[in-house]
Amino acid sequence: MVKYSDGNLNDVFSVLSDPTRRSILEVLSKGERSVTELAEPFDMSLPAISKHLKVLEKAGVVSHRRVGRNRYYCLREESMDCACEWLNRFKKFCPTKFKRFFRKDH
Image 1 (tube, rainbow, N blue to C red):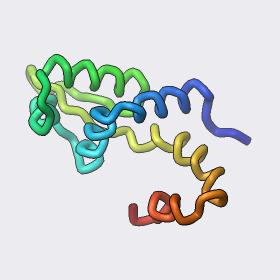
Image 2 (spheres, rainbow, N blue to C red; image 1 turned 90 degrees about the vertical axis):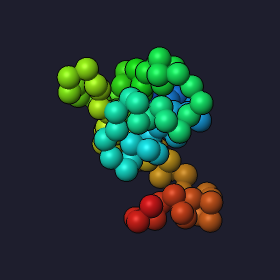
Image 3 (cartoon, rainbow, N blue to C red; image 1 turned 30 degrees about the horizontal axis):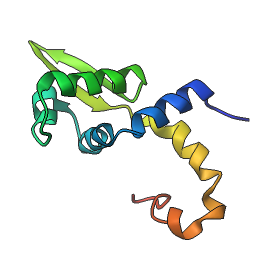
């Protein structure tokens, strides 16, 4: 039985389709970061990064907490489960290409 909704799966793949958002997720995979910290590696304004973060949060991929005037974002790791489960269906068709993706230590 499928454990995810098509809407959730579509939301996750939609946010993953943008290279900036993928980069933000890579940074957040290493731990919580403030908006300012997330903006540092990109050549864009804080409002532009904030827009990306709102899209990620609406899709349920990240969450935030406030400390004073600052927002700290973190990755909601379980939110990627639906995409991983869906991709796992195709592992047998491209074992060499998916080998690295499906390694336990990745």
